[in-house]
Amino acid sequence: MSHPPELLSYFWSNDAIRSRSVSDVVLSGTLDVPVPPARLTADWEREISSRLGLEAGDVEPLPLPRARVRWPDYGRCVQVVSDWTRTLGLHDVLASSDVALMACRGARYHHDGARYGGAAFCNLFLSEDKGLDVHFPVAGRRIPLVRGTALLFDTGQPHAVIRRGSSGFDEADFAPEQDCTQVFLTWELPIENADVARALRIAFDIDPSTASQLDEEQLRRNGAVADVCPDSGAYR
View 1 (spheres, one colour):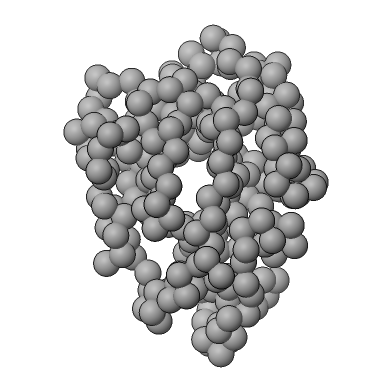
View 2 (cartoon, helix red, strand yellow):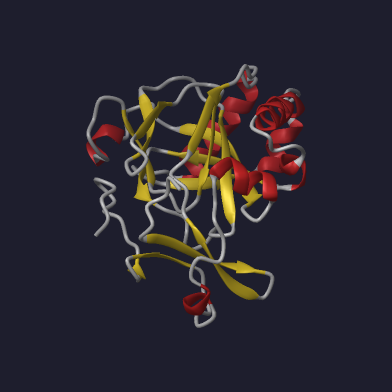
């Protein structure tokens, strides 16, 4: 097993909490996706500046139904990601998974295991290269964000979007005058899907006794709720 054994996810499975390992596998690729049309990116920029008011480290949703009206290549983007996940052995899981459109202005180090423990994230970045990387400190992976960057990873895996060449998250790298927003599609893939679990090497029911006593999802490290430093990604 490649996961750190002291890190466990407890997640809702139907109406019960189930335990599982947290994978340090990060699958990535650079896919050939078309440039979003100018009127669509202009719409995103207006939305980000006027309604979202993104500040350094913020990650917020954009309206996907509205975007699809102005996005003739949306279906092609989805198809390209679907083809990529098939090469990873994931078959048709993408087609039946929830998808959202997101924008970020960098992202502080965090994990999503307290809300999305039952999922893996599959992300497709749509913006051009703005000198940013997504960093997975535990896995020791740093992946440049360019148009077409695709990622598949465990929601319990700490990660951040930081300036290329920096050693951590620094608000000063995302000053208001900097063009550093990234727009991306994200799918929630069910972690219990056999193909997803195999690709990420997830082991289930590691700690059923603790799971049976919990009434909320959580990520635990050495038995305590796991928390990461937002600037460095180190466990606190």
